[in-house]
Image (cartoon, rainbow, N blue to C red; front, side, top):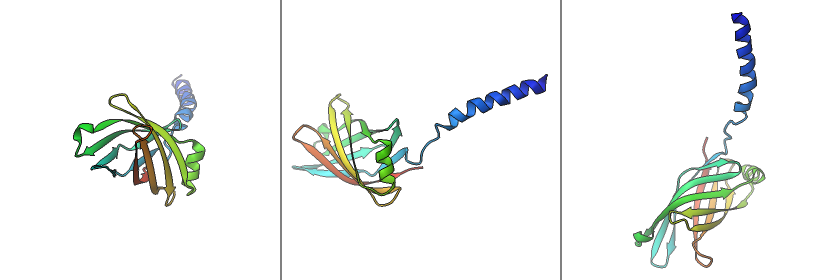
Length: 149
């Protein structure tokens, strides 16, 4: 009787384990973007991103924008980039791609994002991120990225 119970548990384990294995992380599910800055009229804006994590074709992260010397203009919020499987495959093959997304700051203001990734190899490259503060005001950040395992 115990042997039969054990074989049922093993059989159930075979049914349950494969679907969980299908959710294994891809080596391209997490991206680290180096801190970068851009000049403004009489100051500088630095952009700090937590690692971007991909789920269902969207990379998400938290950001912090630090404005020097106008610290009262600092903001933080969420950052989302839409990157399809096809676009991700192109990057891993070394092709330059464009992407888009949006950010929402702590005051619930939306920021449009566009950008371009230029791979150096399958794991590293350069990235240009353009954040539209308003329709006429945009900040451009040039930095590097790397896929993390």
